[in-house]
Amino acid sequence: MNLQSFVTSPSNIAFVKYWGKKDSQWQWPANPSLSMTLSNSKTETSAKIIDAKSDIIEFTNGLGKTDKGLKHLEWLRTQFPDFKNKKLHIKTHNTFPTACGIASSASGMSALTLAALSSWTQQFTLKDLAKIGLDQTKLAQLSRMGSGSAGRSLWGGYVAWEPSTNAHQQSIYQAYDEKHWSLSDLIMIVDSTEKKHLSSAAHKSAWSSPLFSVRLTNMDKKLQLAKEAIAEKSIEKLGEIIEQDALEMHSVMMTSSPSSNYFTEKTIEIISTIRALRNKGDLEAWFTIDAGPNVHVICESKNKVQILKSLNMYFPNLNILEDHVGQGPTLKQK
Ligand code: DP6
Image (cartoon, rainbow, N blue to C red; front, side):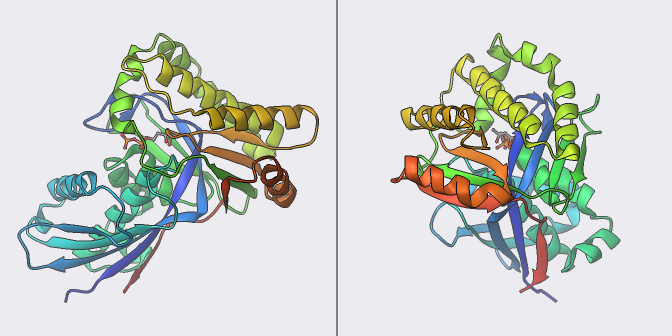
């Protein structure tokens, strides 16, 4: 039997950012991170075994990079040698603009990992995969080898990734599920074109920043405080942590050698406006920014409509994607 698998896997937005690796071969992060799984920003991927000499990855909307995906399929085969000769035809697309600072590698690599393993093993539900030893924890560990942030896309809600003291004992787990607290992410698209610096290369240069060692001394505490803020559903506490953490990560990026700057003039204008409005008591929203120029505005979902209205008023020419906390991946037979 050779049935086709179909996976949808969500992107996630980090509240406490993963930046820098202690070991890039084993994807051992320099610090713990915490993210919110998104609902609308997803990758949809199908996989079918084909009679061919090599894998094919097809981006059905014409956008995307295949190298990282092909490399990850080869790495998966080193873990599961039985599938060595089972080449795959992968079809994939994102429901959001690729390479714009919304982590397309998180949804893309988690979707690819699941679709490949589902197709190879001919198991078409997460339950059935778990029965043969491929539970969500295992799938998260395999996905992070494709892209670190992808490991956090295996669950809905709020997901943590902790490095531990050994590259092979990292833990990735759901801290709170999506029903615990409804937060929204209003993604202000400053630039939807391909990003200039690939984050994998930039991760490496983090160690050269004089600020990086300072950042690392405080990350365990920051993860703890962020989890407490989510437990208490305190948007003020969480907001302060996520803004500080994003600016800290970007300061590391800017002071690394080679240095990367993802901010544009528009990015700065948006973050200044958000802070000014918030200080006036007019906007209960905080920002975070990944490896791209776009600004993620985080707020409680109950305030979303009003906040979106203000953002549209101040930035009438910007495309704003609406997203909110969501569930983990889905899997079925196509
Ligand atoms: C800024 O997961 O894209 O989005 O592991 O090299 O593939 P690789 O990097 P990637 O890095 C994501 C960095 C970030 C912060 C985060 O998502 O935690």
